[in-house]
Length: 101
Image (cartoon, rainbow, N blue to C red; front, top):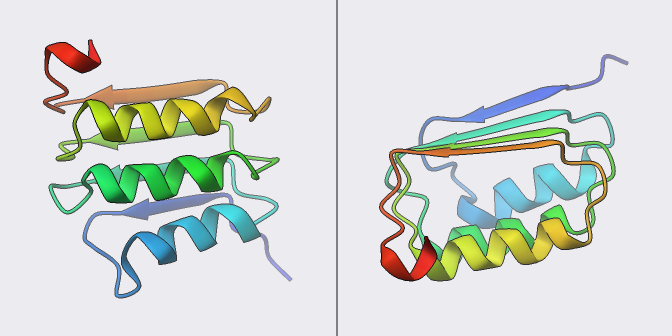
């Protein structure tokens, strides 16, 4: 069986944040996750953060043009605190605001 190393969400998946989190939690070979678009807000970022805390293979996370703010960024960083494997978090074209800087 082939392993899935990279997942890219350009649009909101049918399952929403739950689907993204499930992909991160259950795919033991996942190394790179890309999320692009305004559909990914604070709630979605918090759900992703919780999933990141349980992932043991993800090395790179790219978040582009998302609509989360400081609250969402805090959710992601909380998850990364317990994840020893993520080596690179790339966030660009996201309006985090002064509270998240």
